[in-house]
Length: 198
Image (tube, rainbow, N blue to C red; front, top):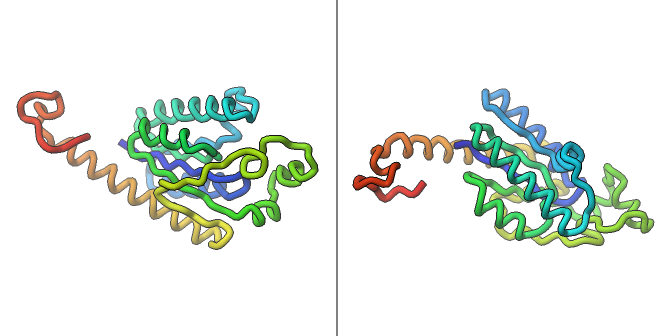
């Protein structure tokens, strides 16, 4: 069972850049990786609208996609804003070996970067429901790692993400060893059950 690394944060915080770097690193290590970018996923599957119900539907579909790829033995890296805590809790409940990374950046820095022009459009009143400005972004309180991209360089941020991925892979290897060591009866629910919970 491979991990799922889910990068969340406001638009322009660096999720896609960091996720792409992590994908390259893992692929050079011989892993099969699926990288799911929120904007690309939305366009590919025809999701539109930015109301809360639209966002929930989009993340639900993304989660199902991840679970399908996860079942095929792939490492999944997701880069998506994922603004509401209920979305993240559902991820924790349904995705095995889920690792949540908050790619955090101050709004002032995001406005300065404004790589997609969203913040300028919102300031001019041309864009409604921009997460973190005119729509809610619930502060992630249970992230496995927080990467502050306005305080750390790209290299430092990448190393923090890479280290988390390596820790998750180590846990994945431990999980496989435990599974292989269990008696067949314990896996099938027979009388030889042990104290392991998989």
